[in-house]
Length: 244
Length: 208
Image (cartoon, rainbow over all chains, first blue to last red; front, top):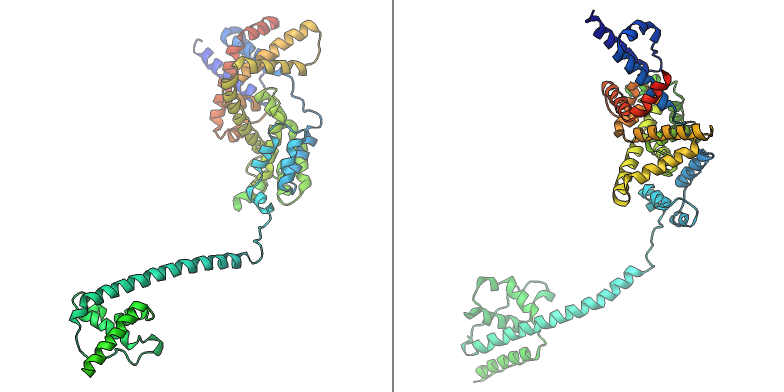
């Protein structure tokens, strides 16, 4: 007898729980009348659940505010209607809930916003004007570089020439690469000068022969006064030797 | 693809699913029907879960905004109401956490609860001064007891009790199992019985 009551208690509590959870399931208290009379615990449980159900159902059903549906639909349509950024920003001046604009802005697709920004066209001829302005700047810098280079080459030449003046030989100088393109062939005087430099210890190096020699010769300014003066002195010496 | 066809067959009779599929196919009026049909349900769920706060209207809008955004990728894998409940639950939990942060920073918890109770009073009907006061007292206590439940217990109880949602669907909403939902509701009722013990005693006494 004592074993049957807990079994019945379990069955009753399962049925009670099911009745509370599933609207379709219904508890038939009359069918459990005998057990409930005998079991004070199950009776207390049933009474508590019934009381709790009563309290829970005492909460009023929330009533949908009038025109809420219309307001929601209107606001959703506003958010999804094509609008430019100015229109969206102007929403701040209307009687909208605080922060609505920022929320709308943050929630709209960024791509759509970006698509509304007009393409920015550069002024006509801007690139040509910029390049022209840069061209003069570049020329000035290039000129400075070249004059520095010319000065350096001249100084190197002079130092070499002064240092080797007394050691100058009498070998006949033949211009290399005489069959090359005319505008790439340095003058005979220039090549002679470089040959002299190449023969001396300061410049002795295979790298200075051949094409390198031509490049160096082409890099020298034949119109330079000091160089011309030196070349003319070489010519005078040669004349004196021939005459003498 | 096969799953989608199967899902559509399973929920084909659900008007919400049909409207959503029509909206997905380009029928803008179908969306209006969704809002008109389900606004009340969303409002009710938010009110019971969050109490009477002004933010509810914004959250109703947010819920349907998410429906709009899900237009392209929507698949009828559950009843439409279940899918919408899940959206509302996520929004409500976010709002609860936001409010919890604000309350902890700005004011003691009791102030927010008081506001809720006063709003409740405004919605209740007039049954006479004495009965009304007693009723207000009970409503306030029940509301407070529900508010103190953990979020999952609260949502499970509200859906089961007030929206008559089967446990299997609540499990989808809360991303849980049916068994876990049964346990959640059971614990929620136990917690309510504890908190509302004086009122239950009174009800039992009145009934006896």
